[in-house]
Amino acid sequence: MLQAHRGAVLHFLQDPDVAPAEDAWAHYPDGLLVTEGDRVHSVGPASSLLASLPADCPVRRHDNALLLPGFIDTHIHLPQMEMVGAHGEQLLEWLEKYVFPAEAKFADAAYAGAVSERFLDELLRNGTTTAMVFGSVHAVSVEVFFQACERRGLRMIAGKAMMDRHCPDTVRDSAGSAYRDSKRLIQDWHGRGRLRYAVTPRFAPTSSPEQLALAGQLLREHPGVYLQTHMSENLDEVAWVGRLFPEAPHYLGAYDAAGLLGRRSVFAHCIHLTDGEWTRLADSASNIAFCPTSNLFLGSGLFSLRCARKHGIHVGLGTDIGGGTSFSLLQTLNEAYKVLQLRGERLSPLKAFYLATLGGARTLDLEDTLGNFMPGKEADFIVVDTACTPLLAFRLQHCRDLAETLFVLSTLGDDRAIRETWSGGRRVHHRDAPATRPDSM
Ligand code: GUN
Ligand code: FE
Image 1: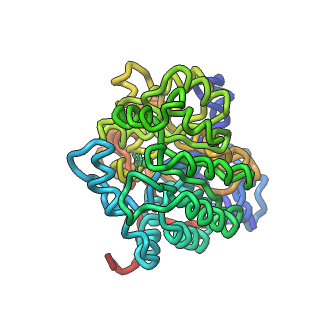
Image 2 (image 1 turned 90 degrees about the vertical axis):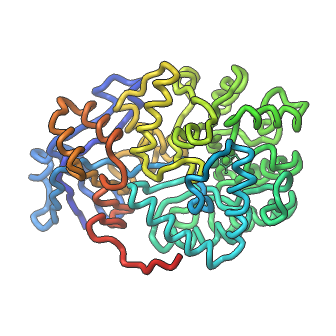
């Protein structure tokens, strides 16, 4: 069954920093996005595509709107939704004071399930259709999260945090239990519908070398499974890893020795990297999640997109809730721009929206499935409202071209700008018809 959406359409075919404009993106001011079931059927200018549609094909009009591929969040924590905006600390103290107590509550399946629903509501309200998600250490937190995603038909990647040292007992596993729990979750969930599993050692300080080695064993035993972790976010953390892994040449070396690098590996932050780490990330085709709101909030430092580009490393955006302060990838782009300003680097508006869509899909090795409107890809897209607030509507009237419009959208836009979110060809969020779920927490 075909369904057509008419409005302005933008999607990316290449990285705008690498390919010439005519190859990097396609923009149809009066465009048509045609879906067939859960897939993209075709995309192009309405003037040429409308005539080819069967007479009974429904056409929805999206006025004052821009249709974009669904946003992709390459790094976020389910159990930290309740402690976003925790005041006063940098990474290591913040983990002890706020994060570990919050995550301990996810031993309770009912609690984790209720938060999972709220978390997915929030992702969809912000136009995020795919995310790479940290659960808590408790396998049940990921179990109930996957159940909630499956009910909604969403494409998500998640894993239970592995952490067997330097943390309270309430959030500690052991090397062996983490291996067994992760393995069972992989067997139950990896590849089930649109769900994928990520082996998830929290970061080097909270995993023993034995646990990291078992994480590598899981990756070898289950090809196609992902790896997500944190790296080189904070200078105290980097110094601590140096003491904990004296044989490793650098922070990345601790992960490398365990066999954790590769095209399905995503390292969050990567702020304080040595040349050797940049080179090794590139050689191993590993990926980076850039988390600007978190890096500013926790005072961690300024990521260099220029270095990543120089080394040809795929970069996606991460909200890093709850170190990050917004579920909105528009607001994440807003802060990304400022981080790069402080570094003396420049983020072009087209590159920014590439990062939020196709760049994210590449970071998650999902380029064949997601990220743009090539025929056959999954029909995950959003309807961005270009008149959602008086200021945005007024400001956009004064934009001269696409780049300026996109830049202002990312500067002034947030969840209010997401009118509709579609996943697998079905509408999963409609801003003007909010869910009526009772407020239970
Ligand atoms: N490093 C280890 N754990 C975390 C976490 O939960 N959030 C962030 N931002 N960094 C981490
Ligand atoms: Fe994080």
